[in-house]
Amino acid sequence: WYATIDIANAFFSIPVASECRPQFAFTWRGIQYTWTRLPQGWKHSLTICHGLIQTALEKGGAPKHLQYIDDIIVWGDTAAEVFKKCEKIIQILLKAGFAIKRGKVKGPAREIQFLGIKWQDGCRQILIEMINKIAAMCPPTNKKETQ
Image (cartoon, one colour):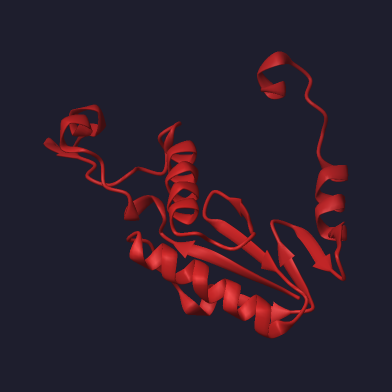
């Protein structure tokens, strides 16, 4: 059994420290603004977001799970076990200041999709749609495309 949790607007749940805000200042139509929440386009946002969620889950004593930035999967032998694990993780995240859209929580289910992979009966399988997308990609022709 599996369940997935997607944290809603995870970056915007993370405040930027006031002493760091000048780094995030910008001007638009002649008016200066600054980000007060972690901006999505900043190169370190993913790492910071993942780390803060990971720390919150560790400190909260989260059950065994797999996390990729703001996406989380839990598994277990029964639907009840998975539901309980999922609820524990949700409570930890809410306490840490993250928002959860209940409609985006999937499961418990015997089969679930997580990050383009089908999880079922203890096995993982890349979805055919993902394989086709990868196969249809043109290989890089220069150094810039390789990056």
